[in-house]
Image (cartoon, rainbow, N blue to C red; front, side, top):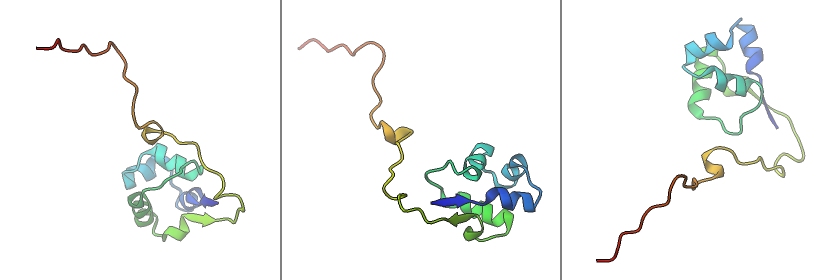
Length: 99
């Protein structure tokens, strides 16, 4: 399992989510989700911005803890990928009369 050490890095520099968000142009919600280990995927640009502002390597933000079952557990799909074809709402289309 991969754990974030973002809260530790922020505390070392006495930064709040709001201050870090302003410096990195990453939303406070994204930062909070990362700090609280609630992300399933992480964009490389997010890591790059954090490393640049915090002056550390990627390994300074993330820590791997061995967990035997981590690859067997599949997260529940969320977002657009969970339901790629949205259901139609509203009235059905009218068919054109044959010509």
